[in-house]
Amino acid sequence: MYKLLIVDDEKWIREGLRYTIDWEELDISEIIEAEDGGEAFEKVKEFSPDIIITDIRMPDIDGLILSSMVREKYPKTKIIIISGYQDFDYTKQAISLGVSDYILKPINENEILETVKKCINAIEKDGFQQKENENFKEQMKEGIKSDGIRKIIHEVIDYMEQHYNQKISLTTAAEHVYLNPSYLSKLFCEEMG
Image (cartoon, rainbow, N blue to C red):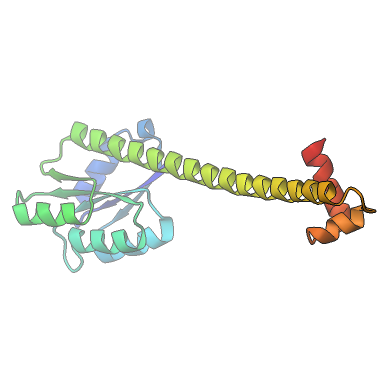
């Protein structure tokens, strides 16, 4: 389930976005509204939305400044900018901030739906990638640990082969690899069966 924040200084646009689109179809369970960038940023801190749809032109903190603030503190949040202005500078700034899309008004319901779907796919892909990275790190740790144990066991075996004509005990072997005798015994049994 995802959270969506809709930011626009015009109430009818916020309500239009909120009530004309079937958000549940996209697994969006919570919709929050804000009427300007300042209020929106407070709601970002409070609710941690996954996706923000924001107007570009608002009093005080506009959509570009809001995007910059969100990008700095919450880089994984997806941002969609809506604008009544087909201005190249706005578009360029939006792209430099890494927004997911820049949609011109009047808002097309299907375009919003498709853009939000892309955002959700990107969120899921990021989550999957993060999980894969964590699994890989865990496997690496386990591999390093296993390699370390194998190295210790082989060192003990080498020690026994080199000193077979002397009296060797678990204690002397453990001292050779700087381990507690009972711990070495456990490792040896696990590794050698």
